[in-house]
Length: 278
Image 1 (cartoon, rainbow, N blue to C red):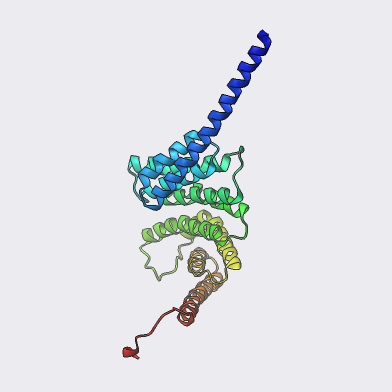
Image 2 (image 1 turned 45 degrees about the horizontal axis):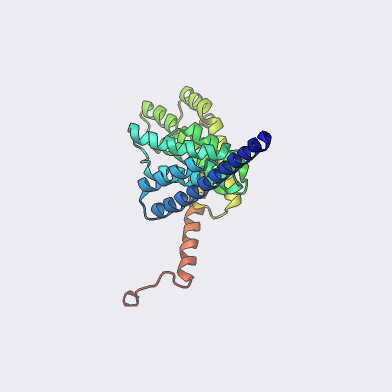
């Protein structure tokens, strides 16, 4: 008899536990829905509180973490090193990383990719270029057919090469149109920048293979070839070749933009000319 009573008590406790878990999941969904509404109304602080509640009720609700990270991101101000602002940015990164690292449940491919890009973008805004580059490379591994992460890596590579080269040029008092011919300085910058230049050209080329009309990638490929040209001072023919390549990407960029504008003008609802000015 005592054994039966004990068994019934255990069953009742188990039912209460299951019921409690079920209620928490319902509460989490309710908070998530309220957070989404607040988010769409641009009430980001209210949305953050709702999403935090949803995560507390159901830590496995990855969509709530995604929204929480995105809401934090909306509150982050790029370029500001204010401690509170940096905390908001790091909170967004923390939530994105929890989605990426989740195993129960595992994130969907879309959740994983968007979280990786979210982390990469925030690190880029914080000027943590190496960290940002690491996550953009992760994005290329998750989706090798997405041109944007390749482009972003190329932009980071250019950013990391441009400043040290310009610093050395400034020390020599060179004008923008003057070639870097000091062999000692050239060798120094070449050693520092060459790998990033090569990688940047490779990444931007890949982006253009995936999206042939990617005009932003064309613009940065022009810049990367100019980076490479300026550190090839030991080889004048290589300098001239890279300069011509850079110029060709300027021309392709302008042509692509012109073709896009013409296409938009010919689409229904496109650019309408004012008859009075024809």
